[in-house]
Amino acid sequence: MTNGPARRATAESGDTIDDPSEDALFLTLDDIEAGEGTHLIVDVLGDVTSRTFAQTSRNSDGSYIVEYRDGAAERHFGTIAPDVLTAHALLTGWAFAVPGWRDSAAEWEQVHV
Image (cartoon, rainbow, N blue to C red; front, top):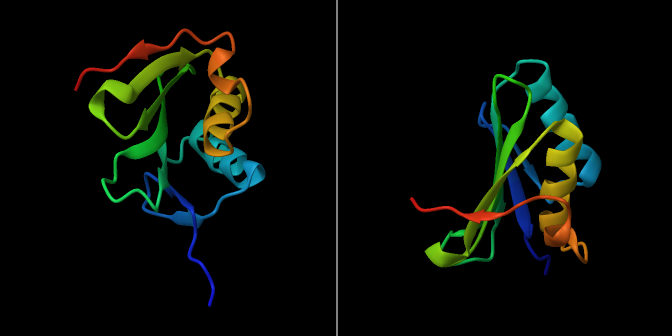
């Protein structure tokens, strides 16, 4: 028996990638840089609440809003990444649970929706 994917990346176009690699996430962000859409969402598929995800969207000035939510609303945080490389580092840090990814130079603020 094969387990299903742990994560799914979804581009604005609706294209999805199951268990995306760091490279696949970068290529999707590179498409956004090229004007093909504005956002990318990475969901944890095993979360029954559908509330564990990270997402990023490109601003007109080239910066990115990066957010992550670990379940409950009080665990929803966001920051501004100055460029695509920083957005990629934060997104992949979250997706692959890289030690210390939250403690980078990013200033995280709770998101109230």
